[in-house]
Amino acid sequence: MAMSNVYFCSLRTSMKENLPAKLRRLMETAGLSSIVGARNLVAIKLHFGEKGNAAFIRPILIRPIVDAVKDLGAAPFLTDANTLYAGTRGDSVSHLITAMENGFAYSVVNAPLIIADGIRGASFAPVRIEREIIKTAYVGREIAEADVLISAAHFKGHELSGFGGTIKNVGMGCAARKGKLEQHSDLSPKVNKKKCIGCGECVSHCAQKGISLDEGKAGIDPEKCVGCGECILICPNGAIDVQWNADIPMFQKKMAEYTWAVLKGKKEKSLFLNFLTNISPACDCYGHNDAPLVPDIGILASRDPVAIDQASVDLVNQQVGTAGSCLTGCRGSGEDKFKGIYPKVDWAVQLEHAEQIGLGHRKYDLVTI
Picture (cartoon, rainbow, N blue to C red):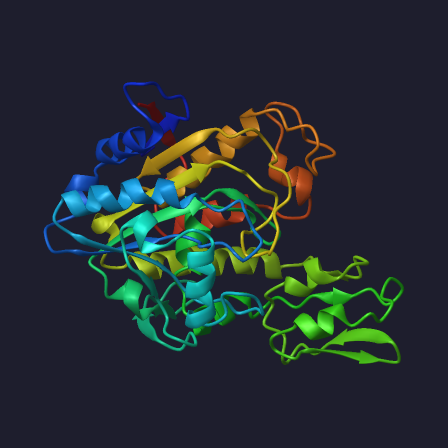
């Protein structure tokens, strides 16, 4: 069976080699110079972090990626696409302000910031792929038009996909608003009327105006709901939850197919990085982050988006869960940390489907540098 190389560096450093230098060596070992050419426009796709969240990748660790690309004669830019939900990254103006407030200033990262799907998320490139579910994907135009893609993903838990790594950073993160909507379209949360006290928090936070109060209880309009899931976290009484059915596997499969679309024509011009640091239970899209599930592990690099996510899951699950985290079970070495926090989510669906459609291989050879 085919295997892919996944390169790993721990966070151990010395006077001879600090972490930025070690990161550059990791990227070169993984083949950075073979994918980046002189005068290439290089999209470095990352998550700038929601305002109030502190788990995203540190800007000073993005700088070595930028510098390595510039040393190869190319022109890098940092990018992400706007969000579906109400927050601090729903349009390019607030998105860029949030990014700068979170430390992604030019003086720190040495590259411009360009939001991939325009000022209101309407700038996209349609990509015909004819996969099992997605026939045409809607990718942020600036990413679609870049010559090279480098994904720098903060590896973490995720309430819909179990974990968020390269596939989520590329498939969901590179999609324009129309593409994000398509991926979420089968998801609609439900309200537990017994728990709902009618406080109205979900109503005020819904960007689609899809929630209203009727006789003191919240109700969700499935016609307006885009499945972003923000109301689930916002509700102070735990009265809103995902409808746990076939929609979750469908969501993960769509995400994998969108990854295929983003990489169409770029598969040989892409490199993937997973930062296994501050491994929080939920997405960086929230305006806070909970305590890490496990201790910091290191950084992975690969040319295979499937292998790097599989290796990341395996490395996390080898750890002992941190004391004081939200893990109440599955804390031991070898136990599934993501099942521990999201027992009803089968995270393997995204990897199985990604492998099936030819994105990469789940079997890998972990090479420590």
